[in-house]
Structure formats: C-alpha cells, structure tokens
Length: 198
Image 1 (tube, rainbow, N blue to C red):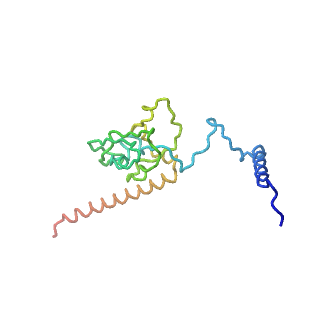
Image 2 (image 1 turned 60 degrees about the vertical axis):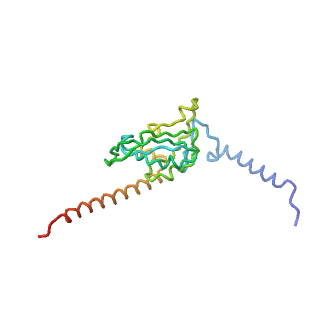
Image 3 (image 1 turned 180 degrees about the vertical axis):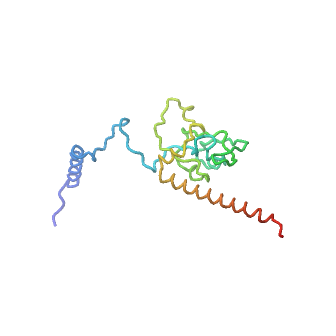
C-alpha cells in the first residue's frame, strides 16, 4: 500500500472549488449570490423575528385574540412586553365579551426573539413575524411597537406560516364547535328540567 500523496487533501479541495466556480457560470441553480434588495430569497416557514398580535375578522381592535391575561408579559425573559388590561369587557369578533389590552407594547430593542411569549399564550394570540427590514434611525421611539402596529390579520398569519396557521385555526374551530354543542345541550336540558310532570 502506497503512502498518500503530500497535499492530496488540498488538491481535492481546489478541484471542488473550481468545479463550483465553473458550474456557477453554466448552471443557473448554482448561482448563490442574491442581488438584494432587488432580488429576495423566499422566507422559510420556520423563520421568526419579532412577535405580532393576531386578529380575526376585519376590525383589528374587535377581532384581537389577546384577552390581556398578562402571561406573556410575566414569562418574557428580557421583560420587553408591557400590557395594561382594559377595565371593561368588550365584544370580540365572535360577539363574546372579553377583556382586551388597552396598551400592548413590545420593545424590539430589547426583544431577543426567543418565542417564549408564543409558547405560553393559551389563546394563540401572539405569533412570530418574519419581517426583518426594521432598521430605523430613531433608537428609542421607532423600536417600541404599539398595539396598532403589532396587530395583523389572520390572513397575514396564513400567508407567512401556512401550515402552523391551518393547524391553529382547525384547533380553534374544533374548540368553538365543542363549546357551541355544549351550550346547545345545556339549553336543551334547561327546559326539560323546568317542565312539570303531568
């Protein structure tokens, strides 16, 4: 058995580099440079940046899924979420009376995009966005996102995370159907219990 040629690994590496270099001129799929911002790579579904609030329907205030339970504010590791709960219950997109946040702010200069707020939310009201062009010259005011800036429609959520959004909507729909069936059963049992025997 002969000894390996001195520098054989370097030669293999140079051959591979040359193959990739020449292949990038011949094969369009091998072009790796994207001329940003004119060209953009499609976002991966699992990408995440900063949180946003999901709302159902057309009204971002009425349809907000957030019920100001304050769990995300308490669990946020860098404490960048600030919520003030409204004192009056208001009807949501389905007409059910719910508490809503009067103030919901996220300081993106502090947020570390850890997704803990998304994981602890029992109402699927807060999700991670994929928007990354958020640079600004204002170090303080523009990096504090208010409720109006954070609220985005469920259709937007379906656009950026289609599989996850479909699963969430299916689960919420099943929960709503169970609640309606339970309410109908309770309403049907009520007159039967109130009826006097003949």
